Amino acid sequence: MVQQFIQVVIMAKYTPIETKLSELWRNEFRASFAEIESFIDAPLPASARTHREWWANETGGSHVQARAWMNAGWNVSAVDLAKEWVIFRRQLTHKIWGIAA
Image (cartoon, rainbow, N blue to C red; front, top):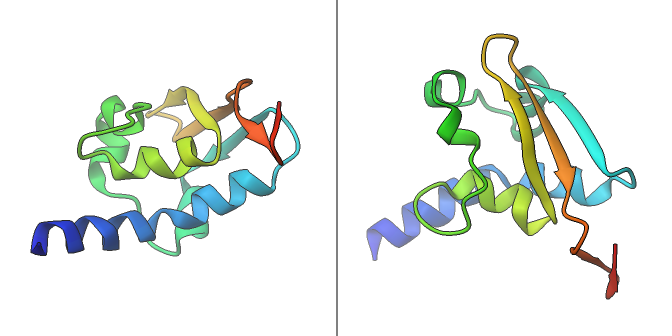
């Protein structure tokens, strides 16, 4: 029960990413890690800067941050850890207002 609560709190931290991506009309969005940190109003964990897996498009498991962009209908298509940027690409099968995009 406590673990579920912690997971929900961590997921909520990344909700602003979902909100930002949901508001976009374009199909690709490039953001610096600093921009992502401004969205979530907190620093990214160190693993986001050192482990490419942190940016994996994982639907289950412990990568709750991935649910934020995937729930909005986006995937990470590229990430550059050295230059600290990520490119999100809209999933073309994601539905917007009930219509396939």
